[in-house]
Length: 336
Image (cartoon, rainbow, N blue to C red; front, side, top):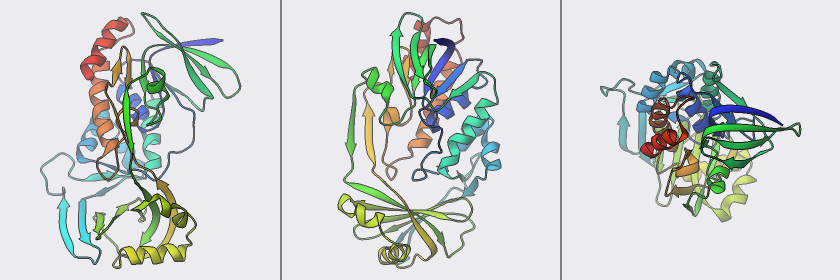
């Protein structure tokens, strides 16, 4: 069995894992990402990067990469009644901050931009897709992880630090028995992709408040939008089989003032809140949804993850290949 050594093994090459690799790319630490999938992420989730996140990405040297990949700017958000009465307009455009805008880019591109920037450095590698991975041992110096490759060959990885960036169903969290609590919300979110008939040069996120529900219209690059509507589980099947004509009629009934020239069903996202009592055990740490999955209408999980990762990467920058693992564990404890 082939064996490789790394300083940081990141389980999961989605947004959180790729962001950590990107933040570590000039640290001198060797980082290896493994992931079961090499396919694009789903499109049903968050697309925008908060002004402070843009500040961090600028410091990491990758903000320009996002705009090169097609990111655009939006000024803020507007809340309306379903009949179109403006209730609140919130804009960051005139704030005295380094980046007075939200940068938005289609969700499936975010991890790719971060990972591409990471792989431009020789200290970052990625193995995907893999069949699975298994924790073989945890001694005083290293974790030893067996990684199953697609061709049936197994590879052994020795690492000082292991990071769980593998989502709310985290295998690492379960393997190391982190205590966690989760709550599945009663309503899922239907995600529709549409082309609005009106033009908004400032790309405001629009939220329409009805008597029993809300409708969020989220700008996407290229002029389209993503529409999110909370629905009960018994409505899932009807939304999945609705034709374009049906979808337009449902949207018109929900928000009479919202007109779209085309519309298609995307997916139904079932939000889960997840909280771990600890983010760190020894020299293992959880990031992103693996430790704090959040409802998209209640938080900005991706942006919070990137802010946490910036702190974590700053501390890990003090971990060299010769630093004893107990010192690495101490820094992780400080991070938590």
